[in-house]
Image (cartoon, rainbow, N blue to C red):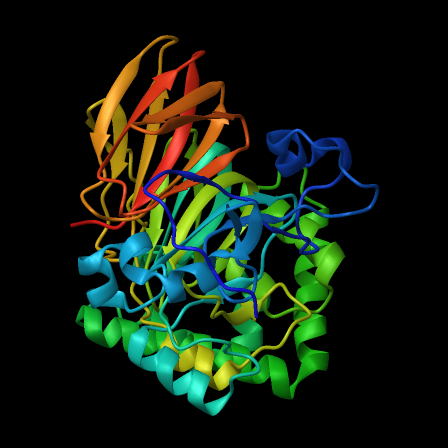
Length: 412
């Protein structure tokens, strides 16, 4: 194994891997190639751009003219890259994973485990749960995002069962009655009834696939005959054509349909079902790739684990607009692993910034941004990114043109 040189106190340009998941955008519509200024290969989906040090697909950095995996560099020099405080808190690993995500089709409906659950799942089934970390995540719309996030409020769930007799019939009279008659019960009891409903939905889908196909077929026929389908109904019909008899199709009506405009964000914690349907976002999460799938996917599904991990909290999720601070918008969340910033600069604008002995990754999404430090400078254009190590105490940025960027760091 080649020796890894000691990192100097300077920003490092990143070379980042692209994940070609099937739901990514393609051809002329592919956002990630346009962001990076590269041609899109015919037929290739461009789903995610990873910036970080996850072992599955780490970024590369150049040290003394040689390329190294960022995770290997961090393991060799945790204090230089992460700083003493971050290394003490998280060990020799970058605590966050930063992504650009471009969805042309719905992602699977999924849920993430909390830390204790992730450790248990990884020990029990490392093939399907590749690490022992939790995965709180924040997503900021680059243009717009359509997503499903969390269960609807209780009254809306009751209305949904009334509006969808096909779903009610599939669930059975007792399960439906237990939920619809729970309006006067406590919130805890309502969540228990929702858990019963969602568990029944998934178990019956596994045990009686013919009944699931019949229920979805009846619903498809009815909705196809409507002249003005709702947005949720349009999502259902499009996904039905792709996924066939998938139990996740019913979740489209049980979860909140969320529309984000540019700069708006959502934060998703453990136990909350969600799926991105369409749009381009930047996303940051704890350094994990753990996913428990609930539908809209041909991939592995673990129904028992899924129904156990869900918190069954109800209501529309908060939409974050961020708070202005020194020319940036900060998206504060409860996550201790990361904090996202969205910055805009006018041409010629310059700003000096301390790093607070913590690592940062900066991605330029428009224009040209120059980084300056005592020993040199580095100029980034649209689609390029840098790692700013903790050993660099301060760095200045100068906008050579009007520009926009996203910056991720570890909160103090």
